[in-house]
Length: 251
Ligand SMILES: Cc1cc2nc3c(=O)[nH]c(=O)nc-3n(C[C@H](O)[C@H](O)[C@H](O)COP(=O)(O)OP(=O)(O)OC[C@H]3O[C@@H](n4cnc5c(N)ncnc54)[C@H](O)[C@@H]3O)c2cc1C
Ligand code: FES
Image (cartoon, rainbow, N blue to C red; front, top):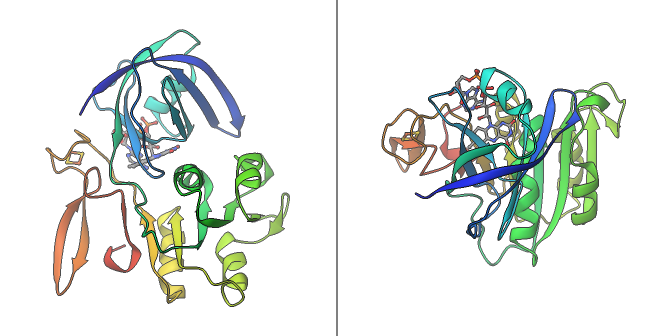
């Protein structure tokens, strides 16, 4: 997998503890599909950090990330003109059948990031977006989802932005009246467990997060258990995923 030299063109805080970094690249960047990620070499850190690709064109790409530890803290302090290496695009992304016409996107917190580019990946599909956050200070990418989605529902747990409650409940309310072909989910493990429990009776695809070493299938750091028929297989989130069918993954 190729390593690209990226140069920061902007690095701005867009919500509480959340930053958007935009990069330019002198080399031509490849195409990607929503749900794929890059593996970023942050200064002073041996292990790279996996982050979803938000946008990527020939000489430009962007990411949105929460500052949760050392690596993302260092990244958030980097300036315009600073350079980093990134392997990209990694993982399978959301690969959808050509027959799909209407799909629901269900995101929680930073889990909304890999869902946004799926809309541009499949211009022929109608997307309805259900995105949940704790509070208005945590809300990200509202304008972007609003511009691209057929229907949008943003929720906050305290009701300070959009509807009060959880995005999964907003989706449940709409499931009866909309003929969704599938639901694509990305969020916390408790949220994924709720989705599994809800048993939507249509295909549900989930983007999983696991700690990673190599990012390219060699080290087996990132394995998760996936049910294939009657067997349980250990699959690598970096290369077999990060997107799996929800009913196949052990949470
Ligand atoms: C496929 C994929 C896509 C992701 N996309 C995004 C995104 O778009 N935006 C975003 O904010 N976060 C995303 N994450 C989570 C992100 O990788 C972690 O928040 C980040 O690596 C934390 O690094 P740190 O050094 O700040 O934290 P530390 O806790 O200091 O990290 C220590 C080690 O644990 C790893 N680690 C810690 N938390 C996670 C985690 N949740 N998932 C995987 N590895 C972790 C780090 O990479 C590092 O190797 C994604 C994770 C995966 C697997
Ligand atoms: S991170 Fe090495 S196999 Fe997935």
